[in-house]
Amino acid sequence: MLGIFKKELMNPPKELHSPASLTSSNKPKLPNQIINHFLSSNPNNAFSMGFGSSACFAYAPTEYRFPNHQRLFCGLDEIYCIFLGDLNNLSSLLKQYGLSKGTNEAMFIIEAYRTLRDRGPYPADQVLKDLEGSYGFVVYDSKAGSVFAALGADERVKLYWGVAADGSVVVSDNLKLIKESCAKSFAPFPPGCMFHSEQGLMSFEHPRSKMKAMPRIDSEGVMCGANFMADAQSRTSRMPRVGSEANWALRGSKA
Image 1 (cartoon, helix red, strand yellow):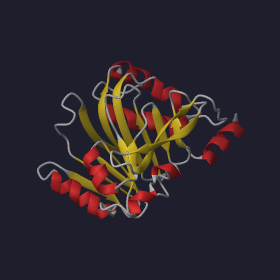
Image 2 (cartoon, one colour):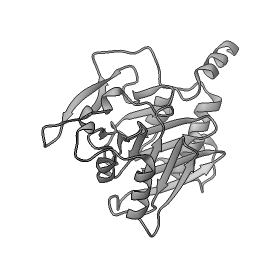
Image 3 (tube, rainbow, N blue to C red):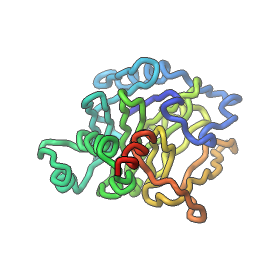
């Protein structure tokens, strides 16, 4: 899977960008080059979906890298989701949210996102903690212009993110594609964490902890994009939320 988002939608920590990308023999690519490379690498079953100049999804239903994990894509009411993995407690989650038995994981994530966005306040970290299984997902809300991504804590599913030549953020489960697309400006997406356009990168495992950048050097001795982890020694007053700050303020005033 592949998602590319303009930095106005997905502005990662500055440590994800490595100055070494400017001098690397493998230069970062532009979004259209990355998309074309993904499609040509999956000629039989891949497709892409663009959203003007703001975002793009590309998806291939089956790949050898995750033989034990499903790969799903769906869209509903201008919200789109790519889901990797499995939720072991999907049946109980569907009952909790009042959804039909035929709802798959990607459809459920969209419904959970809509609940967070429209019916809060309810902490996003608690919603993610309720998910049991191995999973990663990326949601793009084209109407709100926001990105919501998360990766389960058990590390069985992998996601990577990096910075393209124009500053766009690239998200994929394909490490080779990320390396070729982002040069040295890439890193694993941290497990047990979520990213939202307005909240940035946060840990849903440790929602009160600030995120800490950990320098990362590759086998060539070159500084790459940093790893990120929750810093147990620091605290933040923010709680992970999904939805505009204005909406949260409005809900608070009505309480």
